[in-house]
Amino acid sequence: MTIDTVGIEGAFDSVRGWYDSDPEFRHNCHDVMHIVGSVAHDEFAKNRTTFNRPEAAFCGFGFYHGFIEQALLSSGNDFSEARAYCDNLAEKHGIPGTAAACYHGIGHAMFDALPASDWGNPERMAGVGIRICERILGDSFKRELCASGVYNSLANAMSGHQYGLTFDTTKPIPVCATQKPEYQSYCYMEVGNGLIREGHWTQEQEWSYLMSLDSAVRRHVIEAYVHSEVKHASESESVAFIAGMCNALSGSEAEVCVEGAVSGFFASSKPGEEHAKGPEFCGALHD
Image 1 (cartoon, rainbow, N blue to C red):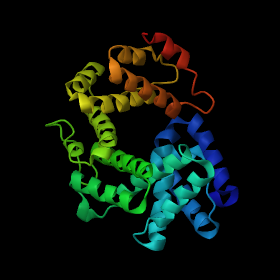
Image 2 (cartoon, rainbow, N blue to C red):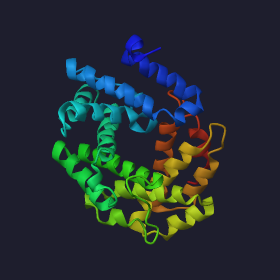
Image 3 (cartoon, rainbow, N blue to C red):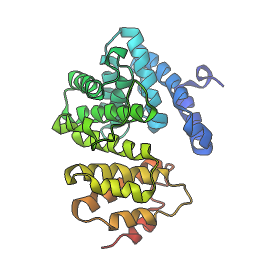
């Protein structure tokens, strides 16, 4: 089977089937989605066809990586086609949804397309990415979605020790303190949670680190951390321990803990099963 014979919609269908049934594929499908994204770019360039498929956000946003890489090969350092693709999705289907993932995907792929001359300096790399988000997107919410993609790729690069980057553990998330206020929450969520995962700590150590953060920073990292905990829980695992985390918090921190858990359920569940663990989770929450 090739994408030429089944088409892009057929490729998405196949990806969905493999993603749901094969854990090995879920962990190694990024390059497959590159190919789908590259072909989708060529289709969009010919007749402005967009694909309103949630699978486009699967596999580390590989679809958008492939789309943007192909766009850059076709038009040089010009992100207008990627923006047009996302805008087309937004006009047809609204935001949130696949359009939101698309704008996030632009930032994600853009960061990984930065030239080697920018490597090694997280502040500079994030800054370049954010400036491109601001240049190509006029709407503040779209810019924020794009920025979240930049910081997601930044955290991934630090975790993978790519582009000369690594986490600075000498002080709490220093790169985020230098970012513009309107984007800082996204930076703290992505880089803060990434730093925790990098440590391979026990859950007690992770929680201790969270509580050591300044309160203004902590709530953002808590939301991302709990979201990630839900995503990493197996389908058979009880989620009562997640509710226990939220019960240990109060005020706005408890609220973002619940929000992180709910978004994690939606991000990690099969379609139609997003609410399956809701009763157990909500039943374990304190009033």
